[in-house]
Image 1 (spheres, rainbow, N blue to C red):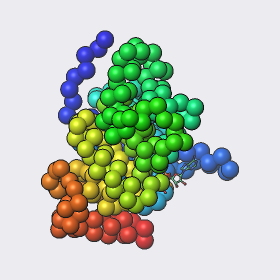
Image 2: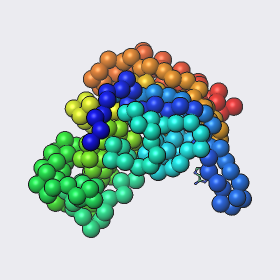
Image 3: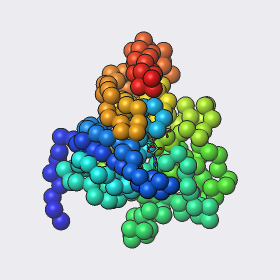
Length: 263
Ligand SMILES: Nc1ncnc2c1ncn2[C@@H]1O[C@H](COP(=O)(O)OP(=O)(O)OP(=O)(O)O)[C@@H](O)[C@H]1O
């Protein structure tokens, strides 16, 4: 097996363009025009931007689920050309298999890879514990709340030990209180696992609370990177973070940037 060389960046996007062929008209829509960005190992990067700017499109391209027609996407020094076990995605809807228990769902990805049964059991149980679901291993998805289902989804993504965790508005279907709990939980898990994370959200305060860096995309279609802002708030972050003048200033700055994009 080829030795993986350590690289300065976990993910590099170089002038990435992504287009869709619109079925209805047969025409091409350049959803993302020119996105360049870098994510360092263990960094938490949030991507925000006006609705329809191509946040999900970009994430899907990084996941290898959508082809791109311009530029390059490079993960650990290797060009992305399709899905791979080095990336795991957490979508807004948990999409759990209803006929499988919590542990059965967490194991699913590992099973597809032919992982050894004992290793699979051990990893799945550890991940379930990590996401705070210990004791719920044998419950079925319909016995779980929305927040618990999203915890299972996170455990499933982490079980495969990905190099890059991709999260596409994972908490936007949750009520405000559960959402805040899950943001804190995600930060705790991220600090324990040290996974590099790319998180898409349209909620600016969520982005600033979570991220080391917030990248703002311009209005779409044909989006580019409008701003790339470092968030220097101390960690661990907690409720007090949200009252920090730096937090409030960054939220206001990004809100202004997005409002200007919408004009
Ligand atoms: N399957 C598709 N076929 C054609 N156009 C699409 C398709 N999916 C998305 N688009 C278009 O691509 C652009 C980017 O969409 P995308 O969903 O990535 O934006 P987004 O920033 O994630 O939006 P939101 O914040 O509303 O979720 C939009 O103009 C959208 O209409």
